[in-house]
Length: 395
Ligand SMILES: Cc1cc2nc3c(=O)[nH]c(=O)nc-3n(C[C@H](O)[C@H](O)[C@H](O)COP(=O)(O)OP(=O)(O)OC[C@H]3O[C@@H](n4cnc5c(N)ncnc54)[C@H](O)[C@@H]3O)c2cc1C
Image (cartoon, rainbow, N blue to C red; front, side, top):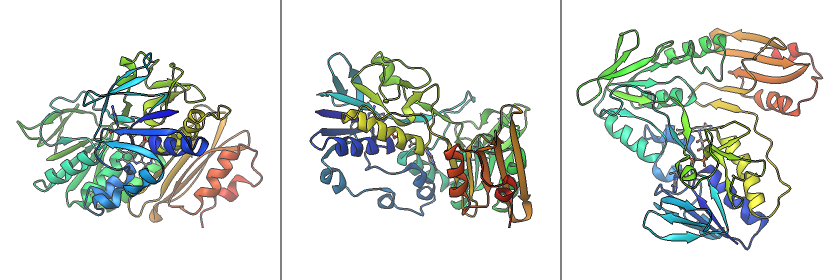
């Protein structure tokens, strides 16, 4: 059986491994548009300021693919899929036949409708090429603006700060990390960021990039102008669905998959940022890994392995800050109970969300050692055996 995989990210690599575990005789071919070996994208934040070299980024040596029987083609983009003929076309015009295909071609950064967003000095960060371009531009800049105060925006802000730039983060929501934090937690985090020399502006909508050819700042919707020579837009990601749309697969926000990670074409599977499961596009590594295990098992013939969704869990890795949020953190209605404790002087904040005496969500800022226990209680989905106050306690 010949399995062709489009992409060489975390979903692709984990699927390839799972296929070969289940069916060691399978032929697995990986096509990667990027000319690099597999690297985890979170490492880009240390690569950006030059703390890691290119070689440090790679998860496996070049020999790993061969040792595992994976035929990898770097710098080779798939330009079209023919589901009826079971083949893909490559950027060099060659057609390659498959028995089963996996779409693991990920996502791309969303750029909101900001005027002049195509000007020199305006960037997004998704891959090694982006990081190299940002680093080179930063050499002739003193200041940077990060548009978007989500996880990726804040981690990028730290990377730019490490490059010696004066950094301002501009967030549209009333507080930083609106998907991971509530307002009280965000206040604690903001103070920590300011102590690192990173300024934050919230409830601000970026409307236009200022500057003739090169960016010199942005205009907000309220006409306020904020200066900054390097502008990094970090406003979310979108599933890269173009290949699937052109192949006639069912696509919503992402490529729609069932619990076997199978798309609307029976021989084509999808995993990672490209796909949508039960209306949800996760855009995080834990989901990509779980989906890859399921896709790999099914591609390898183990059709009783099913995906049931992933409990979102996010960790902010900015130096000195340990922030993890899991599950429901901003409850939708009053059937949930919220418990909070904080120690702002120490940059610590804890919130637990309980429903029907079960722990369903948590925010832990400054409690790295407690997260495994809390996360496992959330995943167990069983009634709490200890009082919430015990879990909420701050030493
Ligand atoms: C800077 C950064 C930091 C992040 N940090 C975290 C984190 O800390 N925690 C977390 O959970 N998530 C994080 N994420 C998100 C996480 O990296 C993604 O969820 C994950 O990479 C998705 O994996 P994937 O394999 O689906 O897609 P990708 O990693 O995007 O890989 C897809 C690959 O497919 C290739 N490709 C695309 N089209 C084609 C084509 N037509 N032909 C051939 N190849 C193609 C792309 O070039 C790319 O290499 C981060 C993302 C970024 C950008």
